[in-house]
Image 1 (tube, rainbow over the protein chains, first blue to last red):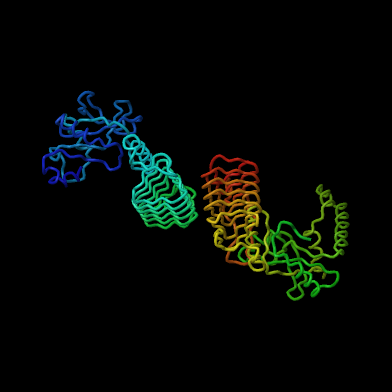
Image 2 (cartoon, chains in turn blue, red):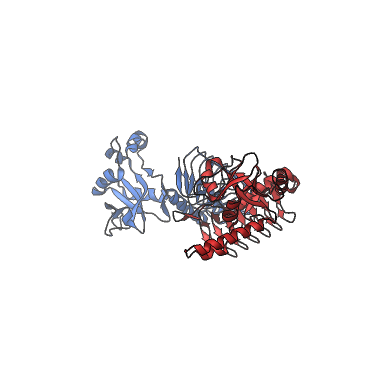
Length: 274
Length: 315
């Protein structure tokens, strides 16, 4: 919350409410519905909540069923109180800035409980998918959910063609070679080059990366500007940081590689390469 | 007389010539080679140790599988005898029979049946002026484990490159990319986008698809490698199939490649309860499905696999 105080002048400038988002979540981002909900109740803050199967793993939100006014928060409840958790998307009125001091502040622990007591916080339930994508494994799951939702809402944005299987998103500036099979559940960023005979499943390939010919990738995240060699096999949530080079003919199983490294040997069992 | 589990230049003519120069009409010649200095402990203890006169090359002392270090010259298991050897075998046999009568040990029945060339014949012949050793600098290795075949193949292909280069595959326009020493049987069909070698042998009637990579491997006849596969440190059995984008990989267990005299140690199959990483072997008519990885595994014949395997023996 401290950063909000830092941006106080910019945020309070026109007196309008503003959105705040955790950057490690993915969902359909219902900004219009949230703005309308926020204006309707007139309180200082709106929180998007999402329904989960195992609320005891999270902090849950207890709210009035009709108005959505939040009564309280309960952290990791041992008995069932609610199955709604904070989805990490908010809308605030500038009045909230009075509550935030210029110091490291946890908005959930310090600001929200007081606002809930005063009846100033309201919860809006999220429709559709939601995923915390802080961990690489969950990032890929979230990516699959996002692509699925694209298929339903905007199928024209997905890629199709020879060798494309299922939901695949490809930047227009990317190049895919001959005899490749890409998908299902693959996203390919700007300027990426995928050479001939490459098989990619359930991966994110970030901007500027190159995947050389005959390689096989499943459940990986390939960082910006990486170069993956020929006949490389990568699987099991292998993550390559920015500008990583993987030599030809290697096998990476669950390797987490920090940026700017060069990999010259196979990693047959999951580990971190620093 | 040759042990069948060795690979060598087999300098038989040189052994004959040597015998003419150094021995007499009745002498026997044993082929010897030098064990790796740094690994003399392990290597020399697994073979026969030969102590010889440096000038006459007569064998003065011989110990089979000694428990202490004897000599850096080891017995290659390749011998040149005359029919006079049968006389010596007979002598040893009769001597053993007599000792058996004197022995009260119940193991005596074994000794009467068995005569061991190394322990019984050579140890007796050493120092008698009848046994000589011809030391070779040519390549020699035991091939006791399945994986050793890859190492032996490398030595033979290297031999070809020096003496019979026409037998090895060359880079040609429209042909596959060849790196190092590669043998391709004339009936094999290899796509021009494949990259083969170093140390690859492709057998009769083998099919190698587009974009295939094979390195340090032997592909036996009738096998089929589908597009984009990667085969490293593997022996692919007769008539086996490897599906698209599959990776079949073993681990080499070579001695130090920088030492020309290095030899492979025989290893135990398991260490600390786990299978020691070794060359991957596919038996005959094995089917590997597309897109899997088979790592450090041994697959028995006629198996049709359905998923990836690592460090396993698949029965």
